[in-house]
Every structure is written in C-alpha cells, then in structure tokens.
Length: 111
Length: 116
Image (spheres, rainbow over the protein chains, first blue to last red):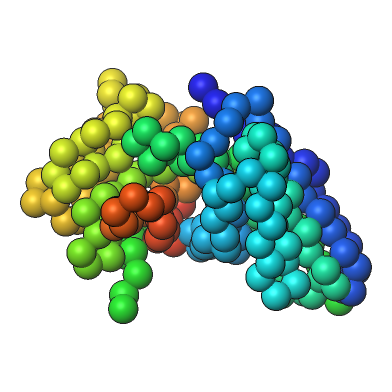
C-alpha cells in the first residue's frame, strides 16, 4: 500500500497571508494531482504534475512536483476567503491509473 | 454538460438495515469509481469499473458490500447489512481514458450515510 501524507492537517490564516501545503510519500508516482473539496461537494481537480521538478502556476496557486516524484507542495499567495476548503493530493500509479489520496489539509482563510 | 449525479444526497438508517446508492456518470465516460470518504480524510477507492466490468474491487468489503453497473452506464452500490462504522460519504466519480494520458476523474457530490 502506498501512503501519501499531507501536512499540516489544518491551517487557519488571515486573508492576504501565504500558505504552503505539503504532500509526501516514500513511493514514486507517475504523476500527482491536487484537488480542492468544499463541504457537501466532491473533490475538484486543480492540477496534474507529471515531470520531476515540474512547477505549475494557476493564478495565485503554485504547485511543485519533487525531483524524485515522491513529494509535492501547493503554495497559495495572498490567500482569500474563497480559498477555504479541503486540499487533497493524489498520487497516480501508471498501472491501472489508480489514485491514492492523502489525508487532506483543511484550510481556513479568515477575512 | 451535466456532471456526475448521485442520489440520495443524504441517508440515515439504523444498523443492520440495507442501503443503496445510485450514480449516473458523465455521458460517454466509460470508467466509473466508487470511493468511501471518512470525515476529515481523503477518499479511498472501493471499486472501479471499465464499462460494465469491475476491474479493481480489491478494497471492497465483499461480505456486506456489492456493486453493479449492468449496462455500463449508471451504477449502484449496496450495503447489507449496514454497520455503525459504515457512516461516511460515498463518492462516485467517472472518467474517460485519453490515449496515453492520465484520467481526469470527475466526482459527484456524494451520499452522506449515517448509521444509527
């Protein structure tokens, strides 16, 4: 079983501050995805990173895939209340295209 | 385009009762997934279908859980009998395999099950 550990589990910040969420594993993944989930809804895909060392930017969100494809980070600049939600990373194993989710990081951005 | 539809959205039952969840995937998506998500945790795969074939059901507790996707479109997940520990959100997702690419899974809103 491949495990993905996310840290921190919970993060509460003020609007305008920056935050970083980490996703770590001892296993190598062919790609890694980040999702955001709001209460009462299913997870929504934010980004897929494929290449070791890859950095992707989505407006104020920056995603990085570790060189060894075992870890990833999500950085949010100038967080807004609309960024509040549960952020999930998910590793993809090439065979069978199976997703293994981390435990999630609950982010609360206070106005 | 309609997303993944799940029903019911909420279900409260007493332990030992049966319960069923229904999922209608996005039109044209041949792959369908059922996940279980406990409070404050990430989803865990229960079963994956390619069309009507269950290709990965290794995490499905087969003593009480069953699933079907008879015509390769919508699917049902059943628990019989339900136990207190089954209280969770049951998510359905669907995807369409892009050649040489990674599936993008689209999730439904889930069914929140409470077993009393």
